[in-house]
Image 1: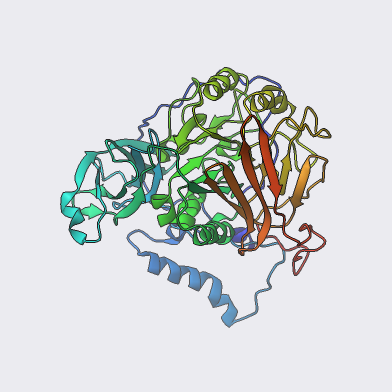
Image 2: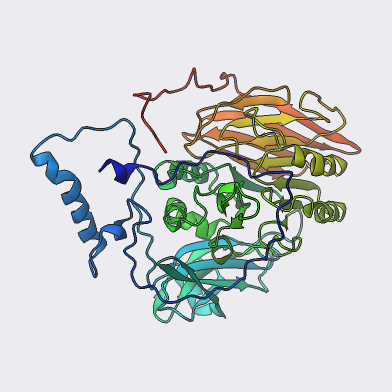
Length: 504
């Protein structure tokens, strides 16, 4: 019984950065094929409902089996609660003939296109998406047009599924649309989203650090609170380590169960972290999750060999750039330089996983500091949004070293964490605000010449804030709005009831 609640594999937050250049990597094929699934009763997820189901049984029956397994011993004796147990929320990762894992992305211009990806079992070989301008009348559905989906087979061990993707084109800017996906007489609900304005305009987005561990049980509250806080957010940035094990399908199921309709309605801009790579500690064996490209439809405007991991999107006067900090760092330099040199936008935000400056004192990422930071400085990047350290840290005007503040540069660097895995911070001169033992989300609003930034705890309390103001011919002006509350540290935040208790 204890084993059921024990993590399958404990992995630390070790960096996959290395001065050893990774061997040339063959880009993953966009479409994969494989033999049919013999059974979906695998035990990949210890708490997957489908893992306990006999053939043909319903999920309710599976729950009954679970109850019998865990509750019947209580009729005869008391089962001790072990302090070293943690509890994953139950998920059913088995695909069905109806659409699930629906996610909205941009692979083209957000003002005129939208891309949707979803999953079914392999009985669905042809699928489509339908879209129409949304209206207060339900009759909008009669005006929907259809787009045939592209379908690929994904297989790993005994798990197999079909992933479908469609890109809606020729949309009107700044227009509310509704779409659904499916095939035949099996369809999803209708989801609404608004296309971007074709001109610079105000917008808000959410930024999330590592989710990674115990996603459905303990990360879900963060994304749900964030969306309740910013219900009209235009997109969500994920700064890597979205899951803990790159190819563990049940962890990806936890992600989609956590967000549900959020993923289908608010576009996602994800960057991969080291945990989105299998064998990430070994540069020769490191491979991007086989699920990354099938289940996201992202821009393919990055350098060769980094499809859908390094890319950029322009949104209402801002350029959002995703970099891949796990591999081919040097190869991204000329691309990054070109993308920033040819940038017509007023604001520039860059996101990737490994921080330029460590928030924990270890895993110093000198290679990124040497290769990428000079380019950020040269082109005056406004915000760099990162993860990996499982702490919170925010600093401004970092110069050529961690102990130097350069008054001529205005880049703000942030490290954050949204999931339950927490590390200890090592306060350093570059930091203005730090934090430990706290799940956070960030709400960032662009309004004309000002960026308003708020870091919020998972229970909706303001933890950090600042404004970043554009000044003609000068560096950005940063106005701190840090609340009066002290920095959250292990010594002044909620401790475990038992020090041996585990939460991930």
